Amino acid sequence: MSAPHPASPQARHEVVLGVLGGSGLYAIDGLENVREVALETPFGAPSGKYTIGELAREGLPPVRVIFLPRHGLGHALTPSEVNYRANIHGFKQLGVTQLLSVSAVGSLREEVVPGHVVVPDQLIDRTKGRASTYFEGGLVAHIQFGDPFCGEMRRRITAAARAEGATLHESGTLVVMEGPAFSTRAESELYRSWGATIIGMTALPEAKLAREAEIGYAILALATDYDCWRVGEEEVSVHNVVAVVQRNVALARGVIRRLAVGLPLTTADLPYPRALEHALMTRADAIPAETRARLDLIAGHMI
Image (tube, rainbow, N blue to C red):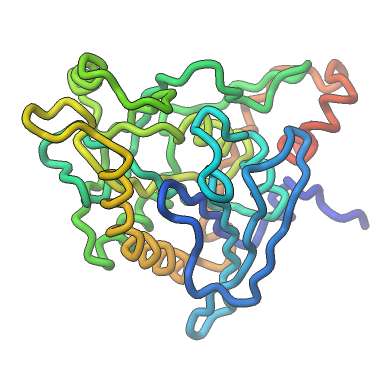
């Protein structure tokens, strides 16, 4: 009997947590049996080596956790330089079923004070020219993206953040801008007029690619500043952002640990999105062999 395809539900029964570190979060505390792995992907090199380890939990087998700092060693990559396709593909290669993104963001609302935590439920895309899909070169897919985050992951992140004592906003709309410069005042006011809550630079195309890769993705957003809209407030700067992030690193690590050790053992109890089941448009016999090979880990179980 042949082994199941590695992207198939039969092969993805263990819940494995991936963590993408943003500004200020470059490691996870408490991991055991740690090793680092450098991967090659069909979409180029990821941001760096993946750290693979386990977090012990009482009465249950340890949970596998895989960590990658999205901006690379020493924070060398701008948001536009990050190879998002390679990063997400690497997580899929390592068996990740659920992915937590930890991100520093600017606040667009008076009530979201720097130091607060937001678990957004919506996105607005203002990026330009980033590779935002795996499906090209002769294989077309249209995923559903009305709710861009995994609802169950959001619920678990919210519960973990609350238990860690965070000042928490349980929903909100995240504007994703290109960067690396911060917003103009006019842009900031425009996003506020749209009803947006926070602004960042990395959630897209990350969230779209994770959905295409059938990985449950959600964000723990750390508010660091008031962008530039707030009259009388010091304009956002790297110095101020880093200072707030550093104060919140311990909180973020606590949330990650609490989230991880509370995860169920199997994907039967924490399903990942089956986003491709009704998304592929191209006839199987029309897919070029090269494209089929490149997308095997993403869509090979469907074609």
